Amino acid sequence: MEEKTTLTDAVHTLLRRAIIEQALKPGMRLPEDTVGEQFGVSRTIVRHALVRLENEGLVVTRRNRGAFVAEPSLEEARNIFEVRRALEAEVIRILADRMPESGYDQLEAHVRSEQSVKGKDGPVSIRLAGEFHTLLAELTGNAVLSRYVSEVVLRCSLIMAMYAKTHSSDCAVDEHSQIIAAIRAGDVGKATAIMDHHLGAVAGRAELEKQPDSVSSILSRYGKELVS
Amino acid sequence: MEEKTTLTDAVHTLLRRAIIEQALKPGMRLPEDTVGEQFGVSRTIVRHALVRLENEGLVVTRRNRGAFVAEPSLEEARNIFEVRRALEAEVIRILADRMPESGYDQLEAHVRSEQSVKGKDGPVSIRLAGEFHTLLAELTGNAVLSRYVSEVVLRCSLIMAMYAKTHSSDCAVDEHSQIIAAIRAGDVGKATAIMDHHLGAVAGRAELEKQPDSVSSILSRYGKELVS
DNA sequence: GGCAAGAAAATTGTATCCAATTGACGTAAA
DNA sequence: TTTACGTCAATTGGATACAATTTTCTTGCC
Image (cartoon, rainbow over all chains, first blue to last red; front, side, top):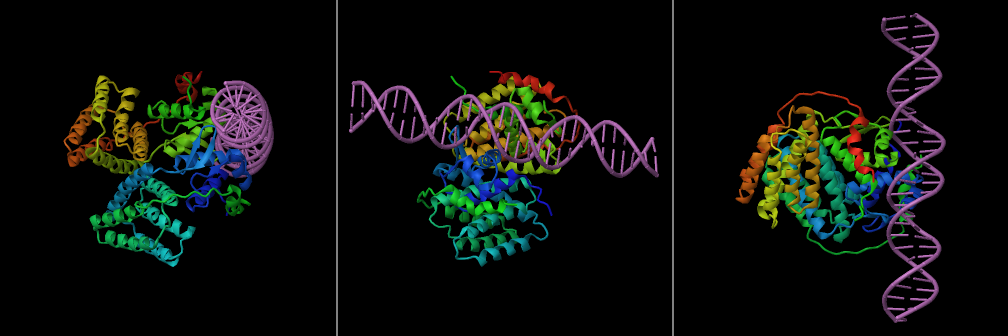
């Protein structure tokens, strides 16, 4: 089976993963040469991937200065959470009205996989916590809504990478179950309330620490997947 | 005063305008070298601009086939309107709570400029009708929310280019005034209701006509602005 | 005339090359 | 010592050249 994705897609995905898994920390520089060398592709590809990441808000580029992993300000963080609440409230509203056939099965399966890594604060845990919300959005069948939710979820991951000490996904998993239950009961108000609390919980921390590491040493862990 | 924008930005903006003003019609092909030739830039620039437009949903690219002006399906159109309603409801909620200083002045000034072109169904009318909603979103001070609203508004313009006979901005302007009044009165429910009606009004038409024109002949009207 | 296969043309995917801008370093003068 | 200035290295902005893929046209066969 042949992969039909373009190289740009591959680099884009890998860089995104590296960012949300906090391997590439906020503020870290992303020189096109270095990244391209690591992945064995030319600057052209990296450039395209960086453009996409910028549109997603995960990367900012300064003219003639290059690309950096975004460092959302507290103001920006508030904005993102505000939008995310509105979007996820809409998701809940839709799902309470029309949940697809195997929706609950998928959700519960996901929660189980979250519980299986409970306790560990590794990259996998971070990714899974975000993917719950992404899955929720996908179940609406609304691709546009789904895409926006994915975007804000990713940016929230970045925000937490900056401002939260630990991801502390323990409480999150429990609340995920509660949200499912509330939707199943058709209680939009309750589900929204839990979601608000769920999102609000992570927005109340504040500690900032930077640790500029070597870019290439980090990317070497991601690059091997491109050697086809 | 030196323009500090990059060439990619310029091409991006021009193409976007051409699309939402319906000069470039849905389904129309956008070959990279044709566009580049028209604007006097290389394919590299056009390519970057097209990537951005794709992220905005105004353009779709098929692998090794090239870029086309997006042709939103009715399903997709419904999705976009659904998201737009949710986002604009949030905008209203925020503005009823915290409208900035000169907010009402700006809004009323905009409505006046809309009224000044009342009756004409030209590109200017289309653009202004959309910009009212964009302005509304910008007044929230939430850049993320503002960006998402802009995106769905643009895509709605594209949808109406496909499915609506005329833009019929007559009723729109009146409702714009009503929305301002309702927000001023702090009546979120009423403002949202008007907005819903306002958005719902345009989603009930259906006629499709394609008219594939020469790309370069259209772009020549936009290209002169790049000759610096 | 219709259909299939192959060659040619057009267009995108990717790499490389040159120019322009920025930041840093070093040197000299106040 | 501090500040101003000039040079240089590093990096991006943009263009061109080549490779790969798709589409279309042609040609031959039924």
